[in-house]
Length: 177
Ligand SMILES: CC(C)(COP(=O)(O)OP(=O)(O)OC[C@H]1O[C@@H](n2cnc3c(N)ncnc32)[C@H](O)[C@@H]1OP(=O)(O)O)[C@@H](O)C(=O)NCCC(=O)NCCS
Image (tube, rainbow, N blue to C red):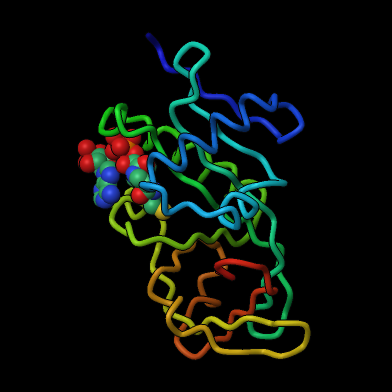
């Protein structure tokens, strides 16, 4: 069956579809997808791949504020990129990434994500983060050096991604980046 790709805000999806997305993410990430990870994927726009009524792929694009070199930017943050295991390797993840990358570049001057699968995202133009990451926990700013390696971004403001430049995200429960 032909895969259909759809964008949807959370309120446009049924409770059953939200549960199906969570099940997909649990399966794709082998039960390492936490409740916090699930929360991080909420509140923006999602790209979902549908095989008939079944959701077989997903990614979310969320707006976050990241302060870069002292200036706050509205950043498009990609979360929850996954394809159901039985349908991996069939081009579904690529199509989802092309769509969500286009949306991120259209709507944000900076797009970011955190991953261990850099080579996958590099295919869609994502670049390694070479700056320094921090978190602002209600006014206390801490270095998050262990996160630098996983971060990738796309930005037209390439001068921001330079060694020594501070990128500070707001605190959230679970993985802050
Ligand atoms: C990563 C994932 C989303 C890819 O989706 P997919 O539908 O299997 O990918 P596609 O079939 O569209 O592959 C597109 C291309 O990416 C490559 N690719 C797929 N997974 C890759 C990975 N983990 N690392 C590097 N390249 C990868 C494919 O070989 C293919 O390359 P090609 O265009 O040169 O042939 C999917 O494997 C998945 O859900 N994995 C588990 C969850 C996960 O790791 N999510 C992302 C990390 S945060």
